[in-house]
Length: 397
Image (tube, rainbow, N blue to C red; front, side, top):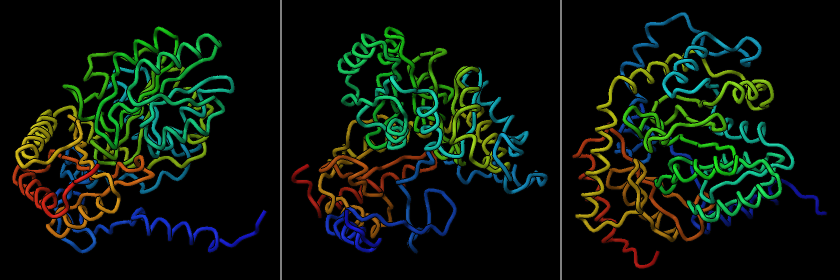
């Protein structure tokens, strides 16, 4: 075993990433979150945000926070100590009422929620069955569980059933884990088929609905409402507030037994300071806006449709997706960076997504739409994409 310095271990790896056009950098934002932003000193239109309904800078939320001066900035402690404020409790109750589940439980991030559910509920001898394209946090949660972890090809129900049959024959408790809307491809899981398989083989189901809640369904209740389904007592749903809600944090919804088990046994919940009180209040306001204003979802739907129509008219081939996530497959990482840089020079911010976030040779522009975009924003952006296509042709993907 070789003893080495941090420099000797990581400098070559960083240099390799640089050479392969895979080195990632943090953009510096100096404006509020909105379609028009200042990023890295550029006045730019943002097409990379998950602020799907444009609530991150909503006047109603800011006004609510200004009016309530009784809240401290920080929670001060974990939920089980002195950090569980009335605002947290009310938010959990209102989320449960909205989703028609017995209870919900707040987490500081979706990543922590995904770790907590799988680590807590699954034991040695159990098996977690995850979609190949699940979010990294779902993968990490499975890997850090004591259960076996097996992946099935993306949305392949035949293979999922084979995995379930194998688990059932061995007497293994199975947990099916899937995104509702997949974050890098924008497509939906076949939730009705997955629910049927779960119930047939007595498996539990865990759906990461971060990119669907607030957006899909007539009331914005996410994938289950979109498909006309009702979650059963063996189903848990994870949602985040940093996307359609425009705030910060996450929650898990499920039965009283499942939520109480997380409160008592989930280390990522027990040993973490509660989210700030003011964030819980802001999220309660965002939830009211989601419930009261269906026009936001309708505006987003119209923008998605308009973008796809404009892209098709200009000969821009998108990956198949009906969600707010509209990926443009580039393939080569260096070429994806060239497209992203060229778009910046034209006044548009779109991040190039490269391995290891996506598989090798599937680098892409992850384009996201918001209800706050105007049709003029979208038309100008599609013109910029067409200019990039002419300058950097996609000869191979």
